Image 1: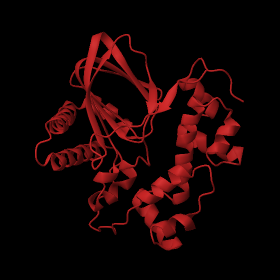
Image 2 (image 1 turned 120 degrees about the vertical axis):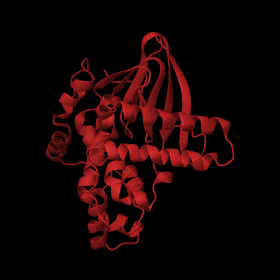
Image 3 (image 1 turned 90 degrees about the vertical axis):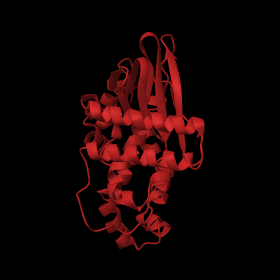
Length: 294
């Protein structure tokens, strides 16, 4: 069997900010709905108990507790106890908030070295961090509801504060440096890779998209992202393969082809490197009742 999972389209309340924040209520009888989206997600419980599963990890959140879901991570939530759970849920795309001051931290915020959900254990242990995160989410919610003059600026500042909180509590903070890198925007490259994973992605093509020479782009990308362009593309292919394994009724060979691998040995080696298990073991971990894949 496969998880019934969908690629959720987040309806932004403000297109310029690429953001949505809602106060939601879940009732005990509601069905778990597996989904993913490119936006980061923050949840903060106000009343009741919220159950949340991100890939193969489950969480039980009580009032005042918070949780982060990384971009495109499969997840679901449910009312874990009592009659109903009320919580704030925040979604936003990073693009409007990414200015030159954040360029040094590309690898962190674009989850190159791991999803931001890896910070959830830190959140669980750090009450001061949870309080700060909750205060920022409440402020964003109030600004979006009231829409007083300058609310867009106020929300943008609050989101930046959230990003700063994550960066300072994260395990992969970039080395401190006094050298400010040139402010080239790599987002067109990241978007292009996401759309063309099934195809042969040439560095010559993407370097031209950002008006760099092949060799300069290679060095610049590695400096900003923390890994080579080839390694980055491979990670994105494996991430997409993870979702396909859970949601599509196709075999592992077809999954590999859909993310651009023609050599199955290479696909298995990379999958094991990033997940510490084979594709079949990954399926069993998230879908204990899944039928055998070939």
